Length: 443
Image (cartoon, rainbow, N blue to C red; front, side, top):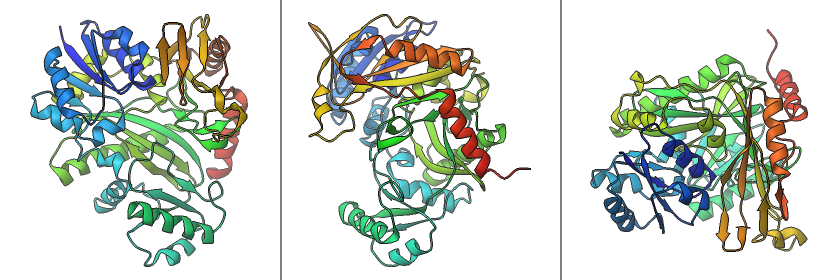
């Protein structure tokens, strides 16, 4: 019986745990979490709660559980070198080493990698470590995006029109980032529709999963502050309503080229998930950024559709045999809607801010799947924290049916909660289609 270490405690890791324990081999799962997730704990043979930076404790937990391999969920343990430490103990990981995780942890590294190896997909960009030439480069762009170099939890990107209005303000914000982090990535603002393409890699073979569209904005109609993600959807044809097959093929081509470039640059094979955030523009597909792990919420759209045994997928990633495995996904649509405290993403002095740390009741969600994120199971019930609480996923033969399942399930969760009812709806999808029709030149 295979014994697996899972690192992480969010809804992404909950669906990872479910996918692992549903393997035909009935593996034993040992979960190391920063905070106790009751959904993951219920699926685990052993649980430890501690810091991702406590490498010695993680190592001891592995030895006690006699684990065969690890699956690393979030970006923080990758950045802290957990995969490297486990490797010294003879434990392989589905998750890259700290050096390879720079694909996510350093936006400078990734942009320069594509440029160095001639991989198409970069926007116009430049990395600044001081103010020399900064104002002139900003003036040469029609629209501006500013990015700190390191991890920002999906909330550090500043976009003209959303976070600042003109070049003068862009210059001021760029100088602030320089002072705080020592470097700033300045990019052209791209117009188009975004999609997430999560790919599995053993370093030589890269396999795409169905594309997903995430919704970062807090409120209906893509309004309000950016969040970790309010929900996402995937379609039954494994495209998206505004995508063409060639768009997905181009995203996969870029990712395969990047996997090869990573090996040439570092001498290491990338073993894990290469999650590309792409945008379809008038001039083709462009790379917004890479993540070095599954997305949250996007993992909840993809893993429940995986028909191939997930433990066998993990083995193939680790052993470099992904080319010999047929990775198959069910032809269904999915809609994920996050249940969050009413105060999520709002200022601390907002009247709804006190909704955090409140008790919630989960009624009959019927055919939907629930994945716990930041919740606390107490003797008297389930409590939220200040972050996203539960990922609610509808799965069906069509997007319309999947959205209905998710929406009905959300209504069964009672308490001071909120969600985005428009995710996966016909109204929002038609907006995306119209937007793309204006951008993409007719042939």
